[in-house]
Image (cartoon, rainbow, N blue to C red):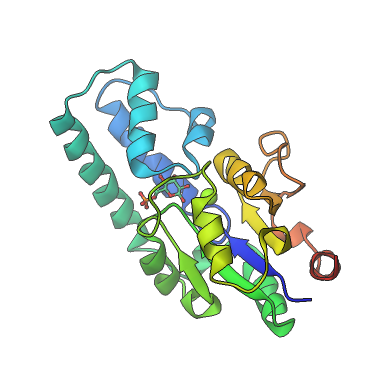
Length: 217
Ligand code: BG6
Ligand code: MG
């Protein structure tokens, strides 16, 4: 059976979640706020604009629109400086194996990412050609946990939502997949991603037999 496998990008395909964290932490330092990795969980899957709002709330800082505009640009410039140095070593373990297996099984493969930098990142790590559909932060009006990014991905592929499988490392992304009526697979810590239908520490724990069971059921 043909299913649609929709992959988040940051923290699922490539190890870029750490770069987002570093850039937000540096920005937080500028307003004397110590931004922790635990707090960063709430930022995963969340748009750039919304992330800044959450950060300012956490720091209890009331910013002017001008400050916000400057900081959004500043955060992205720092983030871009990290991703410009990226190469294929930033691809997370066993992602190529899973992609290749799904391609040999003639499955639908899509990207569903909140990031406006998704395409240049996929180009840098030479994976862009593996995706039949790319829906990113430039294509949506509402951010995760709203399901728009996955629903758009699914509409461009043959199957209905119940035949879509979403790989996500963020709480917001798992909630988006669940709201869309898709199968949600968390990649990361089961304690953080407990709302997912299945959770794996990383793709090395996810076997081809498990992929077969998703394709067949
Ligand atoms: C998501 C990340 O994939 O993209 C978030 O998990 C990030 O941390 C969001 O804020 C937007 O990314 P960008 O690259 O457009 O700032
Ligand atoms: Mg992510």
